[in-house]
Length: 409
Image (cartoon, rainbow, N blue to C red; front, side, top):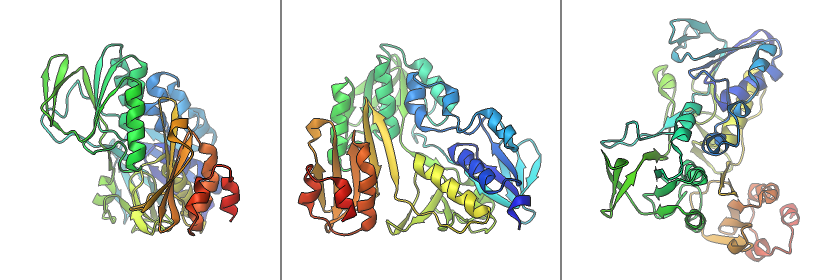
């Protein structure tokens, strides 16, 4: 198949879909490219939804991967406001909700995910706002008024970012987390506790080891009962309890799905003409030595770019260290690596200084790290983790030694 005359179809017009279209056009200037999206917005980045877009410091248009006019200029067809409903692998067509169909030579699935719902009575309703798209952010923003009481369920990135934005609007905020420490899926308990105290210092009530036992109408809007028997009178509840991958289309088409669309190192699914990238995928990471599903800006963008290049004839695998970031109350946290276990933590700098690094070591080998207001250190940290060789903890902790020098060995 010649890339120049190929028909490429992308299902999913989020961040991954937009970056995939961009990379496909660069790799195959004459190819026909169509992007299908259920939302009416062109491809956009999701990190601002719980931060800059929510707190009013960024207009909607600034979230767009490319301005709307760019797609027409690049002869990329956007079919927005219409969902893909089926894939016929034999006929190599995608059927849309309006009854039309589009043929493809190669197909890229960037179907993303959806906010995980509360599986309990009262988990849906006008006073509960799930945050996953621009319209969700608009609805939530309208409710964030001074004096409103916001109960956030879940102290992951989304929950804590929403909590920080709500405090900027003068809302009373209670954060309820079932685990003993915030952000427990991605950082050590010590970092989670550091952020819990950061939010408390900004006036939020952060409760860990706490389960929501019931949600009932009443009071200001919802009465939230928690496992210690206390009741929170909330104007609204924002659940931030994770993302479920958008695998239904792939599953119905008979592709291999295991908590995500399974892809190989070249982002191919179990069908050689169908590729997948972003939050919906589960891929093998050679640096971690295991399969994983990532819900991150970096993975959505770079995996889609890698997929596009292979679709157009490239041969480079997708192999990157997992990386994610969050901004909360003016503090930037970056996370690189995703270890299942570690046996030593090494602090580089003091947590009291508001700028430091925490290394995670396994048998002396750096396997992950967190930077707090120290993003400039991320490049040499990545190099240290990629080297996968034991390091002297005393040298990692010694701030008089440059990380660049340690990374060079």
